[in-house]
Image (cartoon, rainbow, N blue to C red; front, top):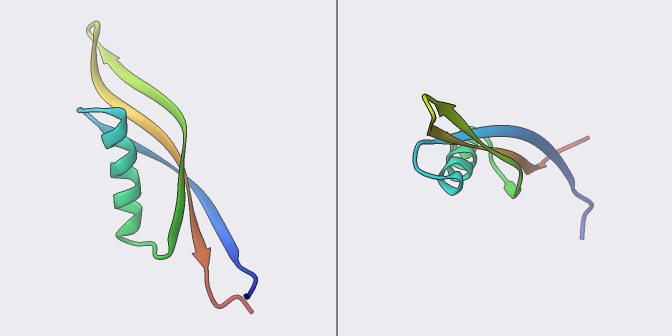
Length: 71
């Protein structure tokens, strides 16, 4: 088995529905331009509050993807 190298990036996903949807939005958006996604780890959850009510859910996500063809 060959050795592997992975890059980890941090993303913030948002949703007006839920934290789960916010995290999913971050991963799916990254998947449009990155390949070989491996692991998503939720690091922090918070909410945007306006006029005493929750208007958005935010999920801070660390996402790893495999780096290929490193010479």
